[in-house]
Image 1 (tube, rainbow, N blue to C red):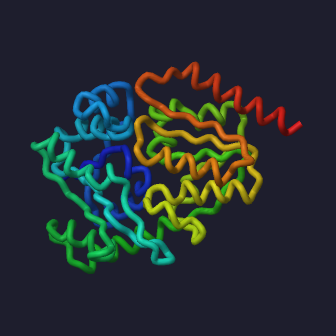
Image 2 (cartoon, rainbow, N blue to C red):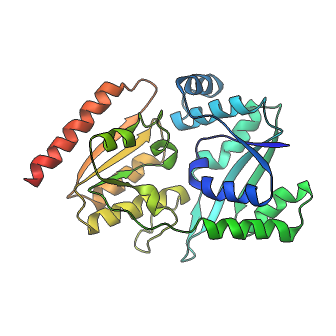
Length: 287
């Protein structure tokens, strides 16, 4: 039995945990390949034109998997509580994603993990999904706890530039146009907002989207540490990100910010030119 996991969206948030969890249960997992232009093209054919590029890519990954796996693993994150008991909600597209997948692909069995801590805690949700494979409650909860232990917070790295964006863009070299590799080639020391995932702030009370909180935590960190510059990157057309971008601008009003929005027509040459100009500006201001 093979369980397919599309390499997009929530995969990049929970990758390390999922790898550990499935390994603990000795389940065979099949990941889709890295994103290519073909992935984007096929995903675009399967989804409405108004949907964001990242979701189109996700559907391209699913198309690759459906013929090669027995189950497709999807997460519907509805509601979680932060460490200080603040209710946080999934992005609207994440909440509705399983329904859209079911509407497009009706020939694949779906393992849908619903995370809604208003109803039950997260480990209980995992138990409800995987008990069908004959595992005891103890086996599933132990697999969950071991995976959590192995994926604890990592030490914060150092850098002059902060890259703010969802990991499904940052770590997808096709979607990000190779941003991180380009910066490494240029010798730029940077850190990404993903290092702040799982952290929260009491001072930020307006934004209640679970997958966006760490972006603002990163922005507050940049303000407090006098970072040289910030690069925000997102895919078009995201409904929630413009709100986040405005909050970042207000939080870091005295910091140089380059805003990048990627769509199917973005040219890499123009992208690199903007990047080089921004880095030159930072060098000039440092003198």
